Length: 378
Ligand SMILES: Nc1ncnc2c1ncn2[C@@H]1O[C@H](COP(=O)(O)OP(=O)(O)OP(=O)(O)O)[C@@H](O)[C@H]1O
Ligand SMILES: [Mg+2]
Image (cartoon, rainbow, N blue to C red; front, side, top):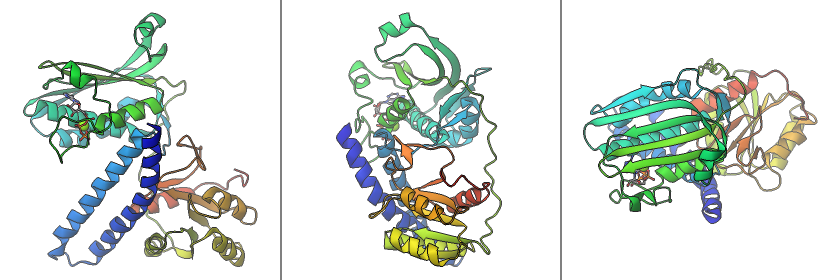
């Protein structure tokens, strides 16, 4: 587990940098193609392969619990509802999706993208197990696990939990398979289509959030996966609307710091095409020099986190000593504990997971710029 984690983290850093270049440049080429260019199809395939690689890297990181997350207090019912359309598309028309939300569901604190990952994996598994027409049910509930119950289940801790259950009427599993399903790379599916990382990813996510998983399955009888996430005391915040006003970079100056040359150039192009004025630095030292020469006119620092010399957070702190109103956005393919503790982001930190698209970049910068002035010590 430890070594897979280290491996995943190490690979993910370089891999995400390279994927950023591949996907970013593919986007730029697409923008320049004629609407009916015959190359569009090939380019779509490149982008699809790139996206698939992004997903694989994320799965590895999630499994190794090295994913950078921003947990939010949320009502799982609302999160699931937002995903239903995507899930229906994922399972196809032959499978009926039944959604049974519990009333007055308690809140949980989890990164909503992790709920996406859990449900996408479970629904694809259910679809494969059904392999034709059938029924898939997603349910939620409030559950209190008492000491007596937990005594029978070793890893359970008594307390209040929110239950998220996914059931299918597919082929089910025998005991031999059941014993192995959470092992990374365990799959009964054909070579090439599956990596066997789905359920180990789900397991990693649930454990990272101090929850538990239970599986009920019998051959021919279908399967139910129950996920218990600890209840959170607070009220779920109203989901902030995702729509961000169109980026208006005009007149704004961004200090960009990235040690990978190809990425520095790519990000600079993205920012310039959004209308920002960019000061680009490939080392923290160069960034500090540019910042000193800027006479206090830098609006935002966009910096890599893992760099030789000095990490992104240290750099930001140094610059804040003479640019107290400058906003900051960190970007990384995999975050060391520099801006996140055990992968959990500090409150109020703006973070972009590499690789990102131009629209993600625009949205994050907008959000950071819209913040009221920060405490420079933060
Ligand atoms: N709902 C289910 N019904 C029957 N078998 C299941 C179900 N979910 C998982 N399994 C079994 O557990 C195995 C491991 O599942 P997991 O999601 O980890 O990997 P996978 O689906 O084979 O590959 P991947 O998810 O990486 O595409 C599956 O190959 C399958 O045999
Ligand atoms: Mg799977």
